[in-house]
Image (cartoon, rainbow, N blue to C red; front, side, top):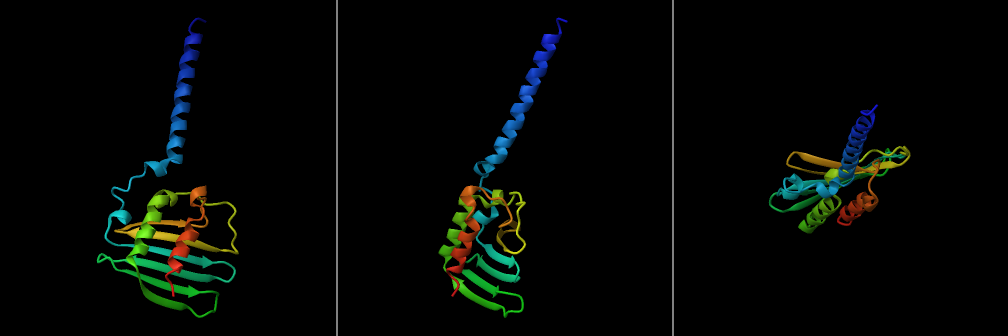
Length: 172
């Protein structure tokens, strides 16, 4: 009988330790954007990268793509392709973009920590009548994509729309 309180105390200690470990793990998952370092990030550190916005699907099956390519010689080019509905004529356009656009896109990438956002879960309330918007950053064999079907944090909820506006402002 005398051993029961000691056993209960040890069991309680183990349970508290397990609870603390699980809580710490969830804390790290929720704050992983603050733990991510851009030291070895290919998109931030490479001379060239690609950022592409796409809107695909919906009831009219529209397809819009705006792709910025920054080359190693610091020249930026923009490719635009749009087909507003099924059966419509596809409009294509290529133009030169200012290198500042690439800097702005990299700032958004870093500010919102796109590698962490790309791991966000999908939403349950997806509407098949609306097109899916996505943004893909890629460089040196690494690629990160976020899309409108993901649950993005409140401070990044408008990120895809902001990138679309930024890219579309250079389409003539």
